[in-house]
Image (cartoon, rainbow, N blue to C red; front, side, top):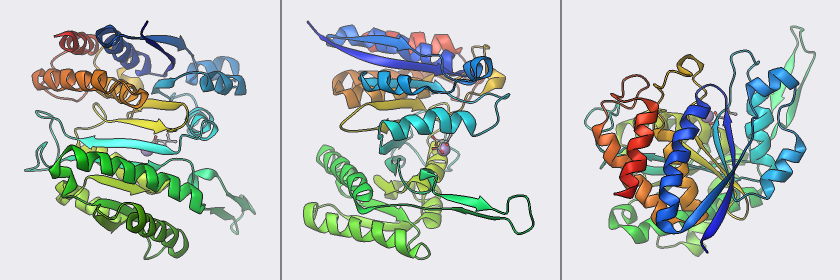
Length: 360
Ligand code: IPM
Ligand code: MN
């Protein structure tokens, strides 16, 4: 009997459920072809549930997630809920509780997908950002005093320890090693550390030394490069072809991957994985809940399908994942645009088309 993967599905808010439905459609079309099964448990966490019950993400849900093989998340964010509550209460809580210390964000421009970068093609834009996902400013260290007075003080600390840095770098180097073996076009390029070590003397130095030491000792045949984060933003736009694997700390990774999402064709296509290589990972389209498009069948499900594709890859179903990617590429070639409402097809039609291509 084939393998069964248990997936926790959190469709979430706004257009989340619509895009997740299409992702599941594609997964279900793919699994039987490769002799495995997917079994889903749905969770209604998100803005609606919070407004009705006050509950965000109870601890027992985390315990249930631990028993699954992966989590598939749509989008979190509700216009009637104050910003921050759901983001920290659901997304960040899950990342931290399940120690999903890698945020894997491919920046890959597929053929026929429009990029705002003039003269750049899918040949030029094909890299992956490894964003450290459990440390840095996101740890919530800091505080505020004299709140509400003119003497108010607030601090928010960037916290890193060597182990957290090392495990992230190791993942990045291992990924780079794999890509180098895949193609000389990757092997010619360096792994790039992004930080701000000209100003962040302590954290920057920790990352830089750890990067150099690990590179020198265990991956001496891999080329290394370093960019300050502000310059990296500039090069992402001007020379994206320089990059292959980019590794960086949490907040910088958050910022540069929104830029990455734009140059690969926007939030309609960009997806990410919150990975615990030894545990349960969570996959999501990078876009938000896009409330204004809810229920209109105009949102692009490609990013959610791409998240599903990444999920299969991380679960070890690499061939199935590649089949989905090829199907996506074919369907993207028929689409007019990757932006909501301009695709030339509806949300469900695109899901149908990818699901069909998978089987051909
Ligand atoms: C992301 C988001 C989150 C982050 C927010 C919603 C907490 O921007 O996944 O990039 O900052 O990590
Ligand atoms: Mn972000």
